[in-house]
Image (cartoon, rainbow, N blue to C red):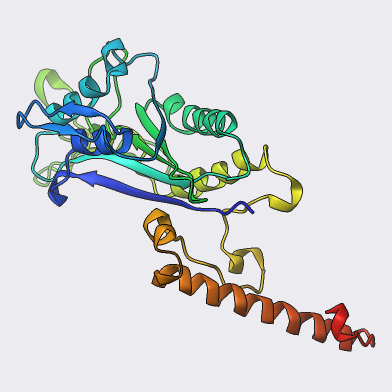
Length: 289
């Protein structure tokens, strides 16, 4: 049965992370970090089933090379606390064949990220333990039409409730300030160059992933991005296990937790059936429960 899992995180230099090393690990490849001179070699990593880079039309063609793309990011993001990339990790429906999984992720990435101007580098991991998943690395900075990186922030006029520019007032005269060449001066503010960091995006991307998967899933296997509480379902959610927990099996605390949760949900389902039958005046035999 398909499960829903999608998590969002950032890859940041302040956490001691490297975009080049992260890309090499997720793609199972060998990349050189030009800033440090170190080579990150993960070619022996097991379970990397597929990798792909998708770019917006204005991105330089050289960014199809993973080493070029992430070294360019490292070079541009020079601050010690720079966010280097956004990562989306999602569980893939194990019911789908690999070519379908690839098309599913490709189309999802194109629609939600690349068409909005992000460069995307993603890989499918599958250790054949029933937990296929994808890691999607996304650039946090847009690319201008001329192929150069855009700033993360831009200066714009501050607007009032009616959408009109707010004047700068001279406290001495109470009148609007006049600048060079007799031009009126208006208040300005700084805002993000893109809306990619808007919190509402998380809900949009989560919902879109569920809808994308459901195009390929049978009705009984369809997934929902909402919590059970939001769906109005009286059921305890399981937790994401991950490949490490799957390999450990019953020895994993996370796997054991899910075993207990599933047992509890079966009991809830049985109690719910009994309550419904009593309300309707129907007595069910044990074999019918």
